Length: 497
Ligand SMILES: [Zn+2]
Image (tube, rainbow, N blue to C red; front, side):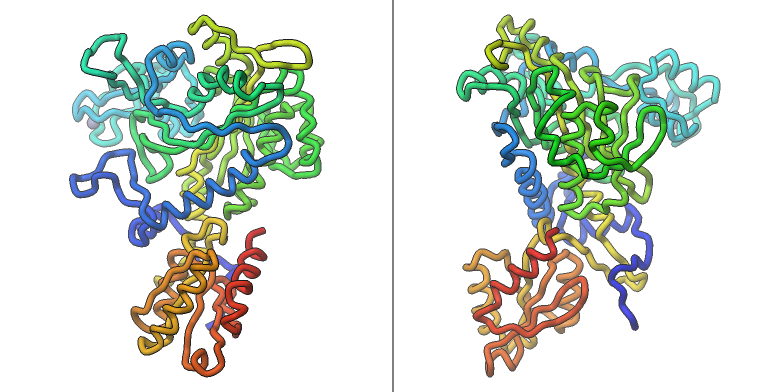
């Protein structure tokens, strides 16, 4: 048997990913013992570590940058009604829905049209949607029944704060983390000075009452975002000097005229705002660092009718998956829309320093959906040899552990435990196991994506050496225990790029 790790032996489907994620402890259905909660998943122990890896890699690039100051906040997911009146979400954050007149199933109307007719229906008016459904005789996919007229459904979860239920106590779970940043803007400026450009970053849960959550981690009601709001002067959006270090980076871009090209950032300038290119470049760097297949990343300029209500330019990052392309990040030029709206509604000024002037800044926002990235990582890195042997080729940066430690036989347990303790105390994330034959233990480590395994055998007792086995090449090398932690670090570091 010749094993070729570079060759994908059989195509991984969404069902394979779901099964693997559940069986290997990456995710659990929320409230599983009560039949689940549609659109929500719990992170299992392996998922939590994968999440941590993504968050760290993103912070390195989007927060700990020296290009300009980035202030990180962590805000409340529950916000008063006034915030969403000002932001426009109460009025505009809705999707068109239709209901089956016989079985009462509900559907998101634009997605239903897209699935049935293969056309882009996002942003169509209710009249247009109703007309398309009638003209094409689109019926309930479940029972063939007639569908209702489409109507708007607001996607925010509403609740009340305190015991009195009226409009003054109305509150909403945030549908995006961004609003916390806009309402914190003035205090950040007051405390930290706020000379443009600067950014505020946040990561956290967001909630959307999706009409039909589906496809595992792809369309959820409870999900996590990593967002940055970059505040600049309006002219800096088109002329942003921190972009210079990315001039030679290549991006695959689909312009709104429908032309897909791979182009250097310097050649995309003028067609796409500098600040948007800056974050697209950072995203492409991040996605590669966490193990998304670089050949499956594309940036798409969103036509005006499909853009969010606050955006005047959108370049979304899309990843190719087994069932089609999915948006994993949205880069929006929000102009001064949000700050102006909050200034008006709250009756305060929302200004920052630019030279010796005070101005309302313009905002560029990269917004990354964490669960979609995780799904893409799992699908792009899960390999199946067709005989049930699965390997999850996670990059060390997002793997749940750095190294596994196994004794060849149970008798060697005390020595193996001693080595585990030593590696753990050196700061490595170690998983120990002594169940079954060594081949089975390797297979187990491969399935949860641990990049390296250390095996303790009889020679270890004689000469103090152990074997390091590489998940991807299956090569083994003999190392003395005193050099072990350093050698592991060295291998992991070389695999990180
Ligand atoms: Zn029906």
